Image 1 (spheres, rainbow, N blue to C red):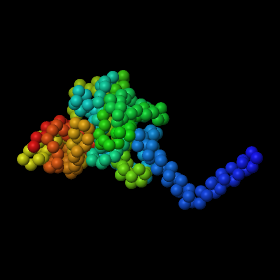
Image 2: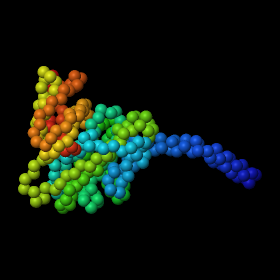
Image 3: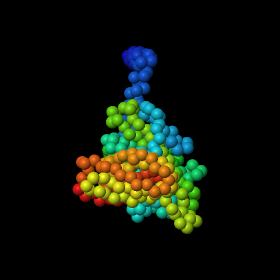
Image 4: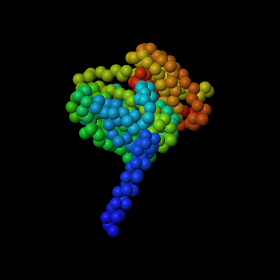
Length: 292
């Protein structure tokens, strides 16, 4: 009796495998697997997808090609609420990571490496609802959690190395999804954000400085820039909950001083906002009170 059951079971298993022998069936199984994989990754990257040396990219799981994140991906180091372009050793900074979009579902993975492509510094999660650390290839990283996919801006802490390791580069990959619960149609962008060391530096001159004012009668931001580089200008308005509420490309500027203006959406309500301005991936940020 037992032998008969085993024989019938083997026949059934063989029939199941044969039913997937055609190319179309294998493609169906492959697509199903990728969709399941994408669904699980809503809770965070599996790791090793930042585009850093030794890493892959998000297109290993999502269809499409990698695009440049310059001007779209933003990484700012804050010390006492003020943005810095260089780090001091053994100092904890708040990292503000943002995407210049109002998209409803997004994701990211970030890693910090020194010039030898080994881990630089340590992460501390300050918002466990929306972010978490992961380890891949022996390197600690930060990625979104499921609840964090509804955001376009995330914050966490980074403590710099105890010694001067030279320039630290943050490798960032973001996923601007189409919220289809599949691997297709998402936009992957990678970028690099470098911060030098203040060790031995007597005076620090930032690459980009800005002054921003709000003009109520035109509902616009007046932006004064002093940039050391040429490049495209992007402005991203973020409310105090960390949500990007307005983004705009303002064209290009040459190195030196520039004056720009951008009209805001009428739906934007009165309140305090963080205004992020970037030129060629160099960022400056100001807190502005918008009063209507």
